[in-house]
Image 1: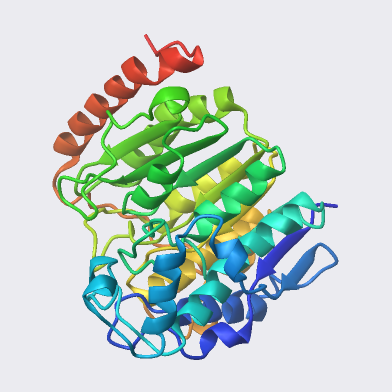
Image 2: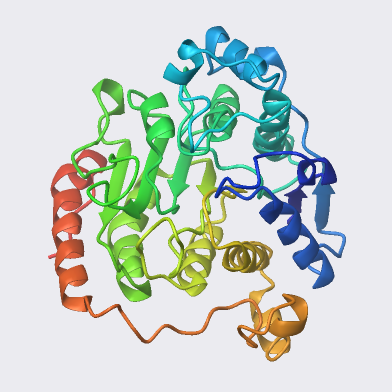
Length: 381
């Protein structure tokens, strides 16, 4: 029996980021209540596990003491020029009460998930409150204060595991990539909107790692208006062969939903069907999976997308898709779409299909030339 663990506590529904911040911390609790109401947490193969807050020593496995001190002071309302240089007290990383305690609990969920996998207590674990991939060792950025992804990957690597970090958030995982840029036991792979049009302005094809890590940073920058079929071409023709060649012991996935069409902070044109398809392909590799949340600034769409991905991770999607038609409005407390968790099939490609397809072929060619030879993969003819 394959055990799946949903990592969450109601404590994360209290406090958190200011209401004016686009990063809405209520999304995780909304996702939990959605999957619970649909029976997706029922059964002997499902666990609900409360996260453990990260201790100071655990945080210092990646973050500098000076930065953590600034986080603690910021949570008490103290702010100075040094903290500002660390990215604290900015529009995207505002100060709020008990800031360090809150982010240590949210980020702790990903390390808790990693420990469940290592102990064999779960094969799949999902922390929707995680995914802070922009945080660096000594500074915050992009709504991210403590980098749970880095800390979880380090926990897995310390146990001797080869780790693949696969990020499908619309924004590039600059903090994670920088942390592991010289390592070959942790591969960072990201499908994201190009840094030419979106924060943080990184994640181009020529960012491939350095020294021992050369070939273990893999980036697929996507053009504005990338649609489902184009996204899946990048994943299947570009990313999947590299994943198979790397042959990780465990896969960590960031499931940011800001690539969905209509997200206010990004410019991709995906439906949640594309996310579900990627999750299904990864699940079918048979490796232990640690999944996290991430971006997603249209709250209802994000919640529906994460609930769908949990459904797919659990292998329930065919049953759910068959039984839920016409129930979406009831289950999601919205009348926008009556087809359950899945989005409508998007017929529009924002009028840019030829432009998108051409840009994607250029990216794939660059990956075939720079990454594939390093892993002994033959490029498609």
